[in-house]
Image 1 (cartoon, rainbow over the protein chains, first blue to last red):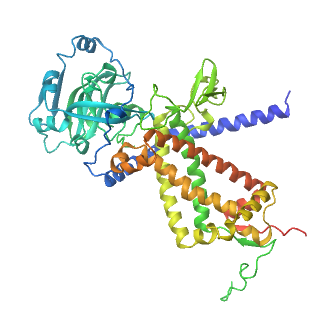
Image 2: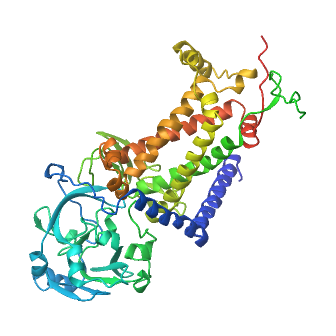
Image 3: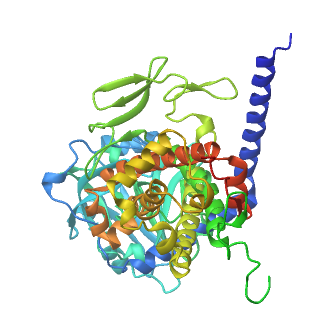
Length: 251
Length: 282
């Protein structure tokens, strides 16, 4: 039997469903998405205008440290290779710097830890909304790049990582403004301890003026490239390629 | 209209029943762009909140830190936790059923978010595009309305209006739903003025600046801005609270439109033309 209340209810549900499928269609429309994504370039240019390329992220004191530094994303890379490295305390882990460089490098963790260090207490901001403050120690990326000698055609650095996701291995990329920033380091220590597995052991990128997903963990190769299109789907990172995260994550 | 303008309805004293120009094009444009923008900002913002449905005070805050607000689920119940108080919100917050009949354990339900199914990345696309729309149109409106003296003439209260007796009179008139009639209806009353000024010059600037302080790039450029709010997680909490204050404003605003004559009010905000309510019979 058709009751008035039932009719009104089903009309409302029908209208809601129509609205919902309409909204989902708008959200999925490629034209709409590329319009929305156009704001990313605007935001990046605006931030680069208001910020000097050497402006530092706030550095905190030991009193400001988060009691627990949360690990997120991959907390334990899959695969026998990584497990063997972990059991061997990463003695055989090598980090290569190649691509558009004059002198490709291949360094062990012992060599990395013997290089000059920078220690910084900074706030890590996850794209999800949480923040944690930690003390990071590592080698300034600039030192490695100066050793390797970037070719003049190099525009970006791609960080190849050992964590595997269903669609692809994790990777990230930054431009040379962030690569040569004084706080951009390859960190091998968190809060005075060797980097824990959950936070990217043995080596992770710190790029302090961007969100957490840019801070590639489990880094084993740094490749200097002219264009991001050479790797993956060409958007410059795992999340960018597969989930439409913004490449510029300063916001 | 002739050269002296004497046929202009506003030239003679407006009376109840007259149809007069009430809202300028700049005000109407900004109103409707904003109506859409604020909707998108709010709903995409709720989806961004869903990615981490906890709020903190201070510089940092993550799952092991103490949150002052949590929306979550325990077993088959949705929960809102504020401080030490728990409210069951099953079906509304924390645990709800999506249109396909599946149980979802997310903070805000599908009908309140953009997009309707969980996607932090898509919500950020909407939020950060329309943030530009909000800021650019807001600045343009502010400049135009200052230049054409809309702010000084129509929005800023006169000293006499700020007298507590006048404010109290307006509160009691609102409470009895006795809205101004005749020529008095053409001016904003004191509660309206204060509400609009508070939203334009306090609430929106706080929402925008706390939004900016969640950006690590802006933090490096303007560290003083995040200090103003006592840290990034405090700023995130303030952003959320101000967004809800804005929702409250919108609800009261809509209620007032409905109570004071929705057809006339809508017409004046769409076309600019407004029929002055007839004076009350004495």
